[in-house]
Image 1 (cartoon, rainbow, N blue to C red):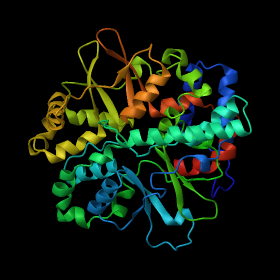
Image 2: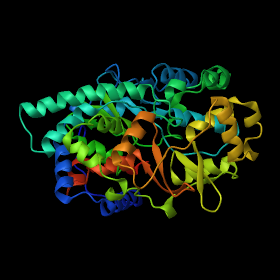
Image 3: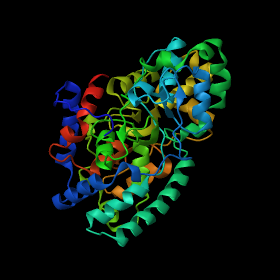
Image 4: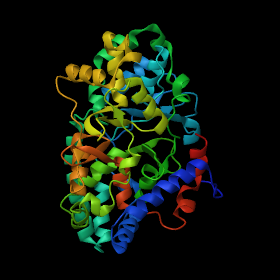
Length: 440
């Protein structure tokens, strides 16, 4: 990992929480031990440099002195929901820790606008962009199944083709809480909300610390995909910047969505298919059981729903009704923008129910807000394909004719299915991460 000084192992409540999550995941997973070990070993041998680069080959950056209105335009023009923030005062050859101040995303801007307008649910989550990535995944099958030489190279090439297809599909995703939903960064939001002089004069730098969801923690191109996947799963990072040791610029920007798209692109490879064919219940999914699912009742105030997201650090909630918690919809952070664009919603936002809010959004979109679900008999492959093709961050597990919500599977959970943490890997690869994570 780039810029990685020796660190002593440090315990903190936050790190303990990460450990508790991953221990729960490992205890509920039902993959055969040898297969899990082979997969973890395989990911540890795939360098980050093999992962498909962002579309266009260049990571889009936003200057810290860019005004909020222009930042939104940059995100919209490049169909992304987040970007590293560059320090314009840093020297050209400065180290990454001096050159980059953090990561700003569309969710942060939405929340800042809400607070500026006098509404402050202060919802806390991040939705990030990212597509493709199966190129690196192709090598995993070769290592896990003991294949070397030309066969491994052929597998990697085939995966790269799959990745291109997956990336194209992702770019066309229409999911409501989609990472590619930046395609729909509302022109109305840009032309109506951000034309106010205050939004034109406020810079990204001024809101960065208040709405900073995660530390700017890069890895080097010589790091392993296992380290990246641990950061994206166990350590709850939404994105991981990639830098080349000794070079100041970001080489890649790997997200949870990108990794899941990469996995989906490996369909047809023996190592992936043997896991994807398993029922989610056979893999211990969902890791979050029914009494742990946080939901919003259809008659709850919408502000209360956003407060639940803030308090529990999640980006979306299932909307349920009745004592059996039948799922009837979903609300996510990206929905906040509708309250800002519709005067009838904004003026009555504090008193608006989830039901009325969903109805207004459905009317605006011209279609019902149908929840994305699966059941305990669904295969892991179906879940991965659904998350990738619909470009969403979560799928709800339902049971019975009443479609009662009994679990949720997130991008983080899917990534966790494929890996475990080897002994001492945290100390060897993520010691620097501890210090950075604990700062935030």
